[in-house]
Amino acid sequence: MSGLLTVVLGVACVAPARAELSDTIHPFAAVSRNYDANLFRLPDGAAGAGGERDDTTTQYRGGVVFERPLGRQLLTGRVEASRVAFARNDSLDYNGKDAAADLAWMLGNHLDGHLGVTYAQTLTSFSDFHISEQNLRVQRREYVDGGWRLHPSWRVHGAYSTQKSTYSLAAQKFNDRTEDDASVGLDYLASSGSRVGLQVGRQKGAYPNHLLLGFIPIDDSYTQNDVKLNVQWIFSATSQFQMLAGRARRTHNFLDTRDASGVNGSASFNWSMLRKLRMNSSVWRRFTAVESTSVSNSINTGALLTGDWELTGKTAATFSARQEKRDFIVIPGVTALRSLDDRTRNVSAGLSYQPTQQIQLALNLFRETRSGNELTNYHTHGTSFSASVQF
Image (cartoon, rainbow, N blue to C red; front, top):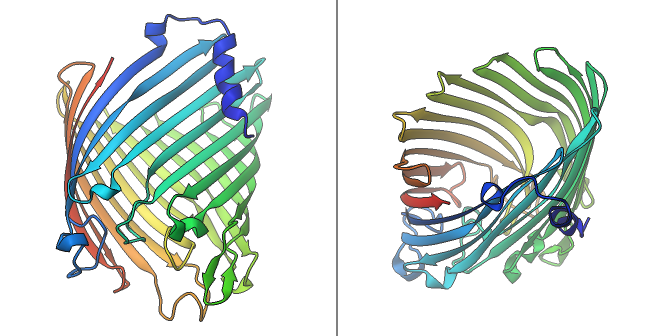
């Protein structure tokens, strides 16, 4: 699928346009100022680089978003570039990149799906890797999915994606990985718009650069098989429930003592009131990659609550509360001599003001804590102010 981006963008070039340029391509620009009281997520009492723990960053972003009808197909996407500058730790200054393209396709009245690619280059989080060196992560994902409505009440579907993650810092190259994900499913479609189905999937992860612990090369490659219930239930125009959850089993190429199985998936509930107040709650339990120097995977169990309240036609308030517990998949007697499991809590609140349809100003505050492992516990808080314009 390496040429997928060329194929998707090529469709836009050869197909006739159905709208003017001003209706399909929208440039935008944004600037933000961000303060973090504990940039490197250090334990309480530990000094940061130069004795300081906090830092302020300035981010400049610019790009375009586009939406182009191609007959019954629809091509959407974005291209964005950014520059991030640190006030104290200027060795971390970097250029970010973000791009995506998606082709929503239809064949006849019963076949439809998506074909697309995403690309992102950003600075790796310091939550699990506390060294003050620049470590850029590049992630590229290519995907294709499709479904066939074989009956007014039944739809069969399948999907395949591949994602490659690479890291610029030599000490983190062992986290380079490629993850291939394939799934097939069958859904029952209710006349109300709700659906209930069953989905089976397989994910394979390959880590080409093995971490050396002593003289032992650790291969973190894995295979995961799962069977999940796929539900989207519409209670009303203002409340919906979604779930993709079931049972999964993950096996590793090296040391089967790390193999794990159990409940895996996520569920969410959305609720809104008169389009002024919107609430979303979600829970999950899933296998997750970890960007640290000692382990590569964990089983994460968490919950999230978000809210968006439109105060006036131009102002809105937001709120978010998130908690996640990580149970690390370790190598007994090799990876760690003690439990590394931890729990992270994050709360944030924000206020936005939109004086015109094109301009938006936003202020956000957050507080985050991690507990459970004295080696990685931390507290931090911060603020962010941003201004953006879309033409």
